[in-house]
Amino acid sequence: MPGDGPRTAAEWPRPARLSVGVIAAGRVGTALGAALERAGHVVGACAAVSDASRERARTRLPESRILPADEVAASSELVVLAVPDTELGSLAAGLAQAVTDWSGRIVLHTSGANGVAILGPLAARGAICLAVHPAMTFTGDPADVDRLGSACFGITAPDEIAMAIAQSLVLEIGGEPVVVPEQSRTLYHAALAHGSNHLVTLVRDAAAALAAALRPRDAGAADPAGYGTITSEPGAPERILAPLLTAALDNALRHGDRALTGPVARGDTDAVAAHLRELDTVDAEIARSYRALALRTAQRSGTAPALIDMLRPAETGNAETNPERQEHHL
Image 1 (tube, one colour):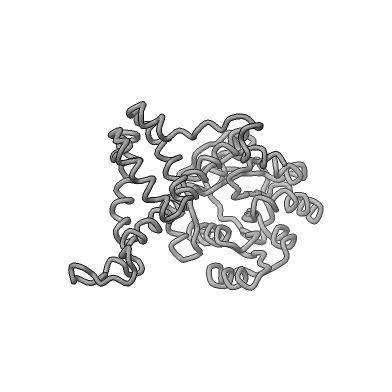
Image 2: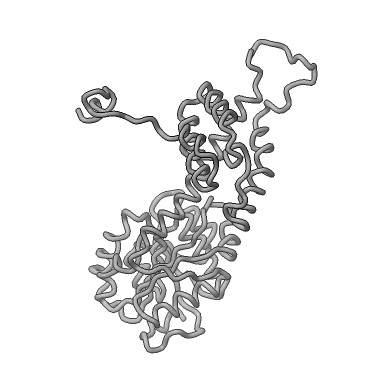
């Protein structure tokens, strides 16, 4: 409990509740803090600097005190470091200087790209260091906490005792622990970023192209069929795409490359070329993205060689004959 002081490593793993401190009160930190409280732990303190983070702390962790980071750490058995990746190393070093005795305390960071090595200054002071990354995107709404209950967590720990603690904490909040080797954290993070971040870009590009398709080509022309233009209203592209993309994602996760359909998988070179011409009239960058993804799709599906050749970037030549390449070297 909060007044008992930190335990020693020999006492772990154990079912007792922990006093938790969260640094800082962003979307991830407050969601994880709320999930730990649901599991019976007590978030006694959190660090929050901006007005938005203070409000988030008051809303999600109403029983916790808002304190400076070093005081949060000193008063907690489990310290959750939920700061951006670029701040994690300096925070760990600063806390190691501010709080000299870390024996028996657990320090958990939520960075996907980092393992436990970045917490070296705290480990040298006796802390039990864990990397526990929720493979989930956070929006700041109450559903974030519920999503953690169905998420996988990439965990890295320096030894068996620390690994058992990490796994126990994840299981307590309903998640699934997945062990990621220290040397593989960057690749792990790259895979997640490629899937989640680029999916958002892909969906928004598709919605933009579809919005253009739903608008009359002559903005001043009357609707020839007389049925109105309900599909050109805001939100129409998203309504059209939602069931299609949901099914495609589900099929990809369930069936792998067998889920590939459409003109690329069929090797329909003419249809793909027509797509590229039309997309280029809407947004040249969307067309370039389509070409790159179509090439990768063609490679995965093993489609017609002619289509792959058509999608490959043209040869750039040498610096002497390629002005664009010369410009890049200026």
